Amino acid sequence: MSIPTTQHAVVFETNGGPLEYKQIAVPTPKPNELLINVKYSGVCHTDLHAWKGDWPLPTKLPLVGGHEGAGVVVAMGSNVQGWEIGDYAGIKWLNGSCMNCDFCERTFEPNCEKADLSGYTHDGSFQQYATADAVQAAKIPKGTDLAHVAPILCAGVTVYKALKTAKLSAGQWVALSGAGGGLGSLAIQYAKAMGYRVVAIDGGEEKGEFVKSLGAEVYVDFTKSKDIVGEIRKATGGGVHGAINVSVSEAAIDQSVQYTRSCGTVVLVGLPAGAKVTAGVFDAVVRSITIAGSYVGNRADTSEAIDFFARGLIQCRIKVVGLSELPSIYTLMEEGKILGRYVVDTSK
Image (cartoon, rainbow, N blue to C red; front, side, top):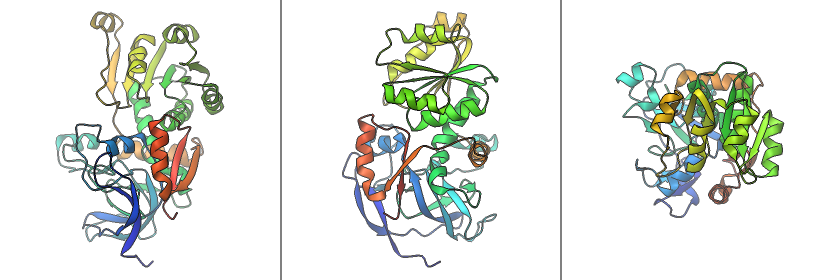
């Protein structure tokens, strides 16, 4: 196909500055990179953090955000192997890593100190054409619905990895805070597919109906519950075996330590700016509680997460809007009004 020299993208020049929908140049892939014609891109809460500059790791500026891009390979660098023009490819949060350090050698590529991050240190998927390291780009089966698979590339992989980090057994209870959002709605489905029983925590009747439709067995409405910890302990016969914190509420994270039963695991995923997790040392030791951080998955985690989707076990509840409408989605994220996952169509 003919590759244009310019394209539409959403760019910001400064953290917190205007999100501009405008024409920019189409990038040229480096020898190790693919050029992907991005058809759809999911919108993640991390994109909001990147725009606002919430985290201690600085973004590149100006920046094209986005790291859930699904599209078609249209060009590749001279050193690329294992890909063909026309293949379906995904742009992940981890755009590239050194592949030589101790972390990369032990399959912890996301923890590489030289990691290149899509939509953060590397222009991401909120554009029509984007580059990705050929080693880390996700392989998507031909014929896959690219709009629906886009959120799997970050949200899906992230919650799938978090559930693996909890080291649960089939039939055990897992609590998901922020269960009605983009990450949480996928976490419910992965948890059910992996054989776990789900306690969903969120606010409002609409989200309660939503999470139950996805398979949550218990719903706890934090806007109505007078004792969240007690309610969860009672519903699960003593507390959950694992808690996955995808919300950005510091209070919710602290509560998860309390409603997780002895010998259970609390997994931290959401990244509220400046937040800390509080756990009494005596209580954590006596109850043998594990508190673990879970970052995005490696290449194997990505392949497994996509496979769950490809086999029809995961359904992405999405709303597709045009790329030009992206600034309004950021506003909804700031206001906590996201239900499910938004996906942008880069052609609009």
